[in-house]
Length: 327
Ligand code: NDP
Image 1 (tube, protein in one colour):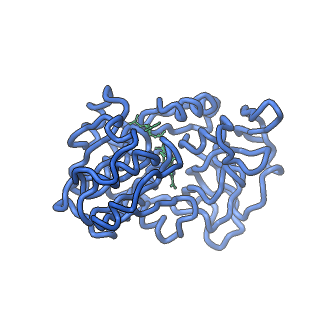
Image 2 (image 1 turned 135 degrees about the vertical axis):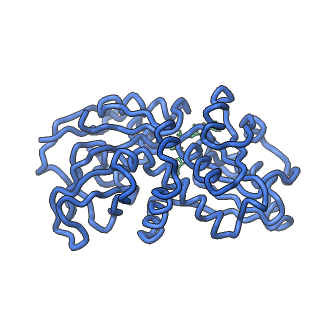
């Protein structure tokens, strides 16, 4: 038997509690992982509270991320004792996930833990950090360099935003952090932000084109914010869109794209191909300052993950939450 958060659904809504689960109940898969750490991402918040229909069947063990050790393997890719990381692939949505002491997964979903990282650090990075890395890689692929100008990060004090700031600053970019929590300005500057703006500047309906302000952006917010981010991007600049913290809508016009050659690049972490994941994790291992990662990370025990779900949806979580599933 092992402990896991189990979600069940009734007419009253989604119920989340820590349960004892038998290994025999684990879903099919060719690799069983003994989990060291999991995390709470925004999507885990949606799953645990039931605020959006991200869970496709019940009962479900949530947790879109985990890091741990292979305990049993029928996969040619993995041996007992290998250290692995899991992000996405519908785990925690359609397949039992990482907020548990054990999980059974498909071998092809797993990425080797980079030797420079501990499983706690990998979980602290989690889907949020790996998505931030995908955004930075996309900006680089489009040829954006520090000489082009500043990069805007929205939802800056959140998980994706915090990691994006550190990664961009490390590569020499000047980073503008957009936040609703101006009281976190010192925190954002300690991560590497050069300047801070109030997110209210971007969140209301705006004009199709505005003053050209940034060469690129990592947007975690969507809605009017993303529209304004595009409208204020410099000629031939690049915006990466990965999130919807303000909303899923995109009330924009074609003006930034046809008059300023702005590129809008969509970023999905869930089904990203393995080669991109391995590249992202390798860059995270080399670029992400361990002290800065530590400064943005709060550790909680498994049972507390349930309460943290509502907190992250309320925009109250700073940086990253790592869940010690064995505590
Ligand atoms: P967090 O909750 O940690 O961060 C989101 C941040 O957005 C908040 O901290 C807050 O930052 C800001 N925010 C919250 N509400 C609003 C609002 N109403 N208007 C404007 N800003 C707001 O979540 P994550 O960093 O884990 O995820 C960020 C987004 O990215 C989510 O929408 C998530 O679903 C998405 N995502 C997408 C992925 C993909 O594969 N495409 C993968 C990972 C995440 P502040 O207080 O600084 O303003």
